[in-house]
Length: 230
Image (cartoon, rainbow, N blue to C red; front, side, top):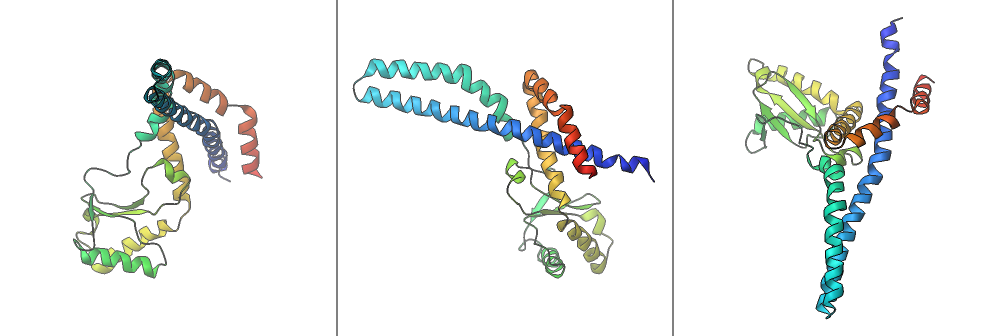
């Protein structure tokens, strides 16, 4: 028995537990910040309406109050909690070029035929690049954690330049094998959350310390590892 492989499920369980705890902690903070944003907007609108109605003094007091609250409380929360959501980048490299059926009809139609033959969904986007590789991938968005999204396909022309049509079709068919794998979605969730965590840690050291304390609770790790073993 390979002892190294027997330890792998435990590390996977730890990763899942960390991501689960992070979501439990992070999502309420996101909703809290959004609620604070809406409160500030409501305060500004309320103050403007009061000034229009003739109560200028009350309107100015409320306006100044919410501006102070927004600058010293809401803005730091937006920077620390919401900013990592907007720095998520779309998976891909600058050298990828998206193609359509009009631009490359033979290649796109070949990919669509293989998708239909293998009973897989067609790629949302098809890209070509100069690398000697072919792959499938998700777009990196926070919504990918909750909402099912279609996969994209990259066709590296460096792989197919000396291949026949049949050999090219075989390689593309292999990539559609990944389309049917659910573990790609799990990997995407981990990648998205890890990107957010890294950005959060770079913003706030207190947040970093708090998350580390939570994810290292012995009972959390023990519970997940025991569940995985059973």
